[in-house]
Length: 82
Image (cartoon, rainbow, N blue to C red; front, side, top):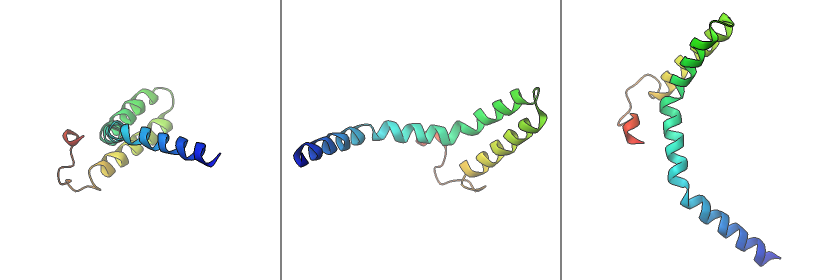
């Protein structure tokens, strides 16, 4: 039983290592473009409920601040590095 568990763990680790670059790329693009998605959602939500729209707009502004290294220009911190 222990051999079988070790074999499964080894296989899972290998699979994670193979997909690590894809995972990192998804995270990078989410960090770079997630604020845009929130801003579009805010614009669409304003017609239905102004408070939800303002909330999403505030979150997208916070996301932009966070994505640019808390207001400072990152050293190579643009989306071309993804």
